[in-house]
Every structure is written in structure tokens, then in C-alpha cells.
Image 1 (spheres, rainbow, N blue to C red):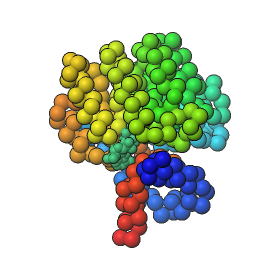
Image 2: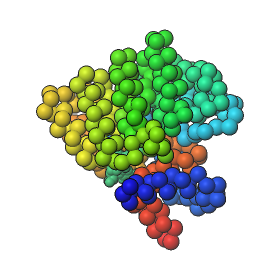
Image 3: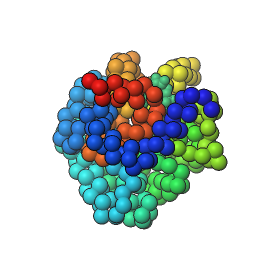
Image 4: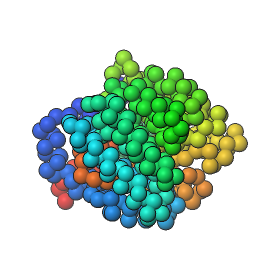
Length: 306
Ligand code: FDA
């Protein structure tokens, strides 16, 4: 295991510690702000307008995951419906991303399906699209099942995310391509064991390229969500060499990261979408971002002493 892989594992482990969470909630809000567009929908919509002005599309995420009671999921569902309506009323270029556990997947999968369905239907009324983020492996199959069930009902304006670090991914991609599900392809952000996931970045990257290629070759619209220059450059070259048009795929990056590069991709004529979270439940999202890059943790430590 190299140093980066070790760092990621350690950080994901300590972020689950209650004391660390308490301390971060107390001192980290200002610092987490770099990755979060604001506390409210109104603030987020203002920020979407700014990014749209630079040619960057958005996927809006109302922060929240791992809820304890189903009534919370209902609240999130209502918020997402307001969010879809808010996007339509402002006329901004943004779809939405939600987390299945935020909609109740860990408590009652059937209720979760109904909550997500309500959001997808509202989005369909406004010609918009809903992305179901992918969480850790206890939820992989259930998330895919919800998406396929909605597609079978004719609600095709919903897609999900596929994580290159999982062994099962290639088979999932084959199945989802058959149903022409719009997928976001990522490396994977959770702590997963060697029983289900590749543990070395080189293996993850090989698998990532494989599933990107499967999409581009089949002409199924896809989103490549990565800040990794090696991947972005490889996609650009692969598309150019194989006559794949720039509108057959989109790049995605997270809000607060590489914003200049996001703008540059838009100027080069690529489709680029920024994943923009807002809301007050920022702790788990924030700690996953820190785990991805030691420099992000360093930035936090430096700011603590300013
Ligand atoms: P990687 O971590 O391999 O690093 C390569 C280079 O990219 C670094 O050297 C650095 O230059 C840059 N970089 C990467 N991360 C950075 C950071 N945090 N700060 C600054 N620079 C950074 N995962 C998941 O499991 N389920 C999901 O639903 C999603 N959804 C999602 C949406 C979007 C839009 C993105 C961009 C990512 C996700 N992810 C995700 C997260 C994904 O799985 C992965 O953990 C991160 O994107 C990190 O991998 P990268 O390929 O970006 O770079």
C-alpha cells in the first residue's frame, strides 16, 4: 500500500470517530465552506447562475445521508421537489443529485423507492434529470434496482453512479448499458474491503478506463466524474481518435475543486458539470473530500492558525 492509499484509509477511519466529528463540527464549518455553496436553496441557485455564466452546468445536491427515521426522508423528498421547482423557476442549467440513504434506503427500501419516484416524476414534469449518487456496498444492488424499476415504468430521466473500485462494476455496467441508463462513472469514495474492491489505485484506474471505453464505444451518454488529469486527458484523446463527439459525454467535478479547470474545459467546448452541495449536513461529505487529498487536510490545518 503506498502513502496516498494509507492516508485515505486512515482518514476515512478516523472520520467515523464521534470525538473527531464533534471537534470538526465545532471548528470546521468555515473551512468546509470551500466545498459547499451555502446553507439555503436560494444561495445555491445564485451560485448556479454564476457558474452557468462561465459555461459550467451544475448538479445540485441537498446535503444529507444516513438518516435515522423515515420522517426525515420525507422532509428530504419535499426539499428535493422544491429544489427541482426552484431550478425550473430560475431557468438555470442544473439537474439534481440525491443520496439513496437520505431517501430512506437503509430503513425501508420500498419507502425509499416511492420517495425517489416522487422526485423523478417532478423532474420529468420539468424536463429535468435526477442522479442517484452511489453510496457504500450495502446499498449498491438496491440502488441499481430502484433505477431499473423506474426505467421499466417509463421514468427514464433517472440515472445512477458506478464505482470503478468495485469488482462487480463491469457486470453492472453491461446490465445498465442494456437499459441505456445514463451513468456517472467515478473511482469510488468509500472505505471498501479487499473482498469487494480493488485496493490499489493502478487497478482502479485500469477498471475506470475499461468502463469509460464501454460507454463511449456504445454511444451511451455518460458522465466522467474525476479531477484526475491523467483520466481527463485520456478521455479527450480517446474521443478524438475514435470520432466520438464532444456532446456524447460530459466531465464532472466537485464544487470548490479545480474551478479554473472547469471553466477551461467549458471554453474548450467540452460539456462540464459541477456537483454543487448546499445545506447544513456537511460533515460526511466534507470528510470524504479530505480523505481524497492530503493537501486538502493541510489547507484545513493552515487555516486553523490564521
Ligand atoms: P484522485 O483522488 O485519484 O486524484 C487525482 C488527482 O486529482 C489529484 O492528484 C489531484 O490533483 C486531483 N484531486 C482529486 N481529488 C481532489 C480533491 N478532493 N481536492 C483537490 N484535488 C483533487 N464517489 C462515490 O463513491 N459515489 C458517488 O456518487 C460519487 N459522486 C461523485 C461526483 C462527482 C462530480 C465527482 C467529481 C466525484 C464523485 N465521487 C463519488 C468521488 C469519486 O469516487 C472519487 O473519490 C473522487 O472524485 C476522487 O477521485 P479523482 O478521480 O477525482 O482523483
